[in-house]
Length: 76
Figure (cartoon, rainbow, N blue to C red):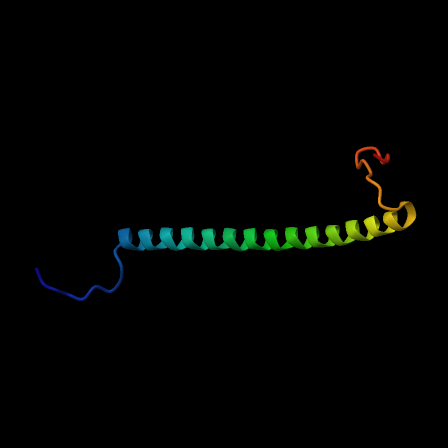
């Protein structure tokens, strides 16, 4: 058997490399999507908290320090 230098990967090696590379790219994209979703979700939470705080401040100014049932709007 002569030891000739190979000109490329075997088909099996190439398929294994290709499969692992595709799996890596898919996982990386999913991680990026999840990070973006998390960022957008926390941005929405921040805005909602700011809006809620503004409304609470407005209601305290109008009604004073009272407890309000959020399910029906009645004072507790």
